[in-house]
Length: 206
Image 1 (spheres, helix red, strand yellow):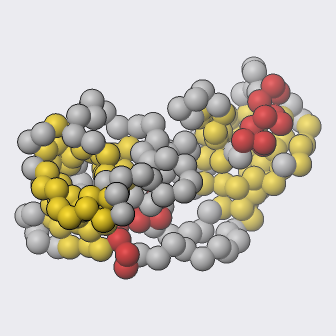
Image 2 (cartoon, helix red, strand yellow; image 1 turned 60 degrees about the horizontal axis):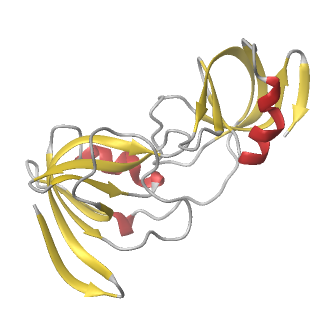
């Protein structure tokens, strides 16, 4: 059920109630949105990726929730949600502000979860089988997946090495493991911010 409240600066305060049917995720697979089946159809509730762990504690698939949201333009940065999730979007996209699990009564306000401070994670050096390449909604290379790690690639890094990847079965890297708490990646793997990649025995600085 959707209840539109007061309009403020072209944004509507909206309450969304329904059953969680899945999640959406960004270009590298970090969860950044809920899909909720409401009486009006499927609604997408976008949230910052660093809040994913707390949101998923209250909003597992199949549970009923009541969410405080905002409609209107997305804030600066990549639009949310990015590719991922299931089913047609018929009830709109909203920015998640607060959340209550209807069964347990537990509540969460996203304003109580500040963005993590930047800090360097553990330096990792590894080599392993290249399981797959992850592309974004525009078909651009976004990450490399090994059996143990997800190697995130910025657009300029992907452009630098994409032509070298056809036929590659194993890849080496040096990089820093993401240490910020709260993120949940759909692959379940640690995310690496690489400084070098080794392809066909050649090492490239990124």
